Image (cartoon, rainbow, N blue to C red; front, side, top):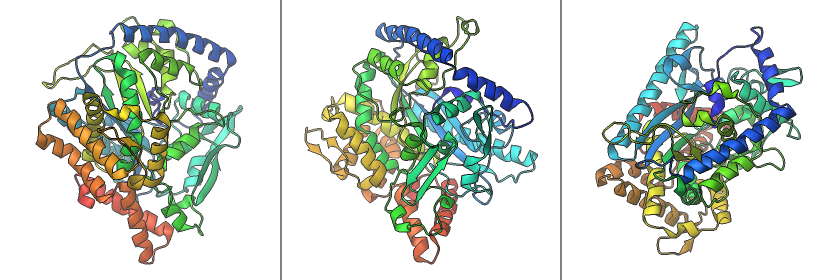
Length: 540
């Protein structure tokens, strides 16, 4: 669920092996008043050092660098949701996530260059291939059909055999703690679940066109997956400026990449108003995520406020509402620990700082164009760009990475007046894109300083400044075409994955399928095309 720290856990232990008793004890310890007090004190202390390191240049690096996180879900041969088989994460080198069906792969950072982006694509492709092989082999060993595999998609729509509602609701209360059966067994997930639930009025809601439900767990958030490009900055002191630009491109980026217009089909009633769903949001991942984690009066998942500098960015993390704190014994942190591990409470607090763009303090050493280490050990500042849903193919995911990195560098290279766009206009533009996809009103200021809401102008300029940024990073024109061209095709045709999905469901209904049948048939075709093509542009 994007929050970082808990994903080191996972596993498939269940009732009867003592795991749940340990989970309950860990949840109670995390939610004790004294834990909050100790945790918040440590966060404040550690934040002072992080801010000082930024100010002193200790988190600066030699160049821009890019990295990527990609989330996926697993299906069976009938395209139904399926758990990741036991042993597959260890064999495949990927991380478990919130739900037992989720997985995440990561690429280590490379300097933003043609060779670096090529390595990103190669490593992401290899990581997905390894995950597929490990999941198939582990599934076969466990007696599961070997065609169980991960899907590059933003939201699953074909329910598991027991049904979506039953899957998301399965669990039991133990000593006042709800243990969600299909949630990974890391204690931090369950503590977060308990802390969120006790702040909610009536469970976790889904209230979207055609579907209204309440669930007993934040496992609802596992409906959705994302691809998160990272841009590592040469100078930590510049984080406020880049955050400002990143917030201004949220709407156009979502408009070009929307990919989750449907919930699982069985969450819609038999007599669903299909037109209301088809006319509904293009990117359901955003409301599902926000409604799963944001209790009444607390906006943890939202567009970030503007910050002036690195110190203000650190302060924003400290000031954020504390959820499910965990404290680390200082004796367990060696002097030579990686940067983030030297500040475990601050890192954990950052892990629940769920803004649609957020800074990360400390990270892996980037790799230079020649493949060698290039940076300041493990100390850096990067931006995580978090609004983009998982895309259909590896090339599509890396194209988004190139667009985001190129646009942020290009906007800065041009000293672009987009920085003057009011924050509220950028926020509204983001939610317009969530609702209306590539046809949304998108707030933009052109390079000439003209204010517009025209999506054609906004999207064309976003891709144009991305070209400028990649050119400044040494990309020749043919390489820029390779990565930006697929997104330009989406802009010209006004067809994103979400538009394609809606068209396929409408076509199915026109040929006599029910809405539910059409959604599931669309998902079958999506999976087949995702696995058989190099880029979404081949579907157009």
